[in-house]
Image 1 (tube, rainbow, N blue to C red):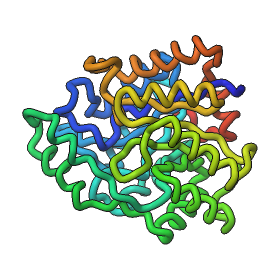
Image 2 (tube, rainbow, N blue to C red; image 1 turned 90 degrees about the vertical axis):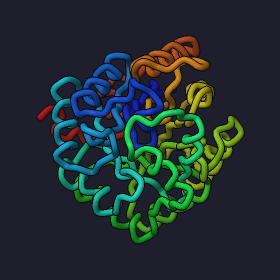
Image 3 (cartoon, rainbow, N blue to C red; image 1 turned 45 degrees about the horizontal axis):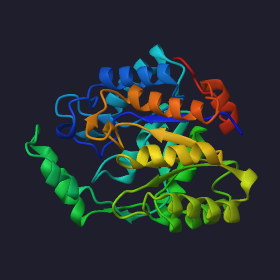
Length: 308
């Protein structure tokens, strides 16, 4: 098997500060978390930006720039910026980070979908910031938009920036969307996809669901035309699907964007703890961990401005 690529989604836009005191919010905290995750064995840092005063998701290029600069000063980890953004952001806001900074990788959601975060409000007794409750509740009447027009626009943006798209697959139909874009010449092989499993509105996060996604991907693209990774949203799904992916030859994402627990009822104190747990699982299963440059080779990345 290829060596294992571990991605750390260090802050995201779906976890709110009231869920855990360990969520990084400022550029310095986010960069520190990425560097600590790299030290633990992660080779990709998936980056969202947050308002350093309120912790709310932001598309500010100034904030993104500070995060990216700080990460590059601390680590050789692959930077993978979001184009998913946060609830209510326009397509222009979401892709501006790619045009401006031309990261090695960027996430690319493969379609429109219901994206429900509202059940989280039932588990929070007291909100730290006034924006959080409304932000979560608004997703009961929210559709994350990526129309075919949007998909083509993002494809073109990625090509112009020489940024490798990480195709975020939240459901089976999105696999077929990517196949269409591939046929149209808008995507290039080898594809790299992230199965994001367990979001309310998308596919579940069971072992059977992962097998189903993998089988359809093999049929649509051919086994040698893509690489894949998985994240199971929430505990313990993050680690159950990680173990399955390790055995199947896939790659793994962990991070506070998707899961705040290191064990049952115990909050993780950092993204690095989540990475370390996956490293332990991989070693028990005799799967070696890739370095950043080995990951670049596996994913066929062009290393753009690795430091400054």
